Image (cartoon, rainbow, N blue to C red; front, side, top):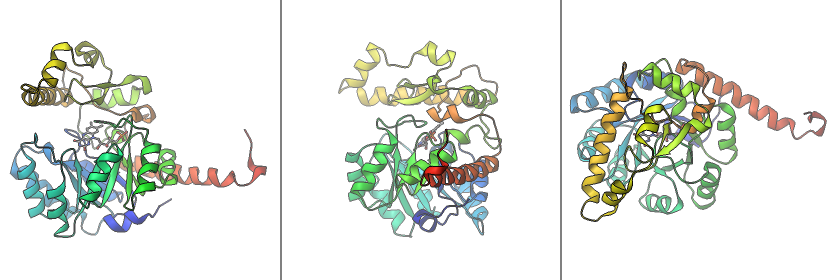
Length: 338
Ligand SMILES: Cc1cc2nc3c(=O)[nH]c(=O)nc-3n(C[C@H](O)[C@H](O)[C@H](O)COP(=O)(O)O)c2cc1C
């Protein structure tokens, strides 16, 4: 079953789903498969280290999406600590990327520049305070990031965050975190979200080029196997509780906490933590690695095998239909059977 919400028209896509941006994980093959399935396929600009690579990828995706049911976008970390922010923004603006997701920091500049050529900017939000700030700056919509989402998940349950945003604001809400099947997607649409953003479920795919151990760990993981760690970036993120993750621990020690909180050291310590965490992640993702530091959300528990992206999206549509049919049946008491 296909679904139409205001997002389809707004983002020029056929299915109201974002393939979420994933640091070191999103790649061009995944983007193209997402575009084929009518999704808004996104990637973090930080996945590309050179200007040439980023420009080439954007050009390739522009050409690829022509006449296709989906589209593409980028994720920009708008924080001052991102040394590539200005450069990546300029490249994306020059090449008129149609859709942006900003995370952290102040997205003012992104919103102004992208709106100038008619692009759309959605901002990651985890609470109402940040939502109000980016709303005041004129963002086109929110990516509501809830508890247990892959990466830097939010502190709040998604069903509460989505409703709070819907009750207060008049712009679209895209629900992110824990959606890995059509039932999850139906529940978010029922809450009023205009679309969902799916990350973890797209790691265990044939198009994704992370090492096989990472994919298998997602397939094997249950809810308890995903834990929160602040060892990678200094902020809390979801990781698979592998032997290596257990060995390095998931909480900063006394010394690290002290350096993070001291006004003289915190800026440099945070930068150091981020660089060393990034190196560990990079090693873990490559084939033949020995370190197993893997980011994944609680939705891993719903992932049962490594499949092509098309199979996953097709199943989402079947399950979505099933969920709506099941709910419809509840209107007729005669249908109620255990
Ligand atoms: C491996 C991984 C890397 C991620 N990297 C980023 C990122 O660079 N920028 C970002 O805004 N979100 C990032 N996220 C969060 C996703 O964009 C999305 O919000 C999240 O995956 C949704 O929850 P789910 O994993 O339960 O589907 C990442 C998530 C994962 C699993």
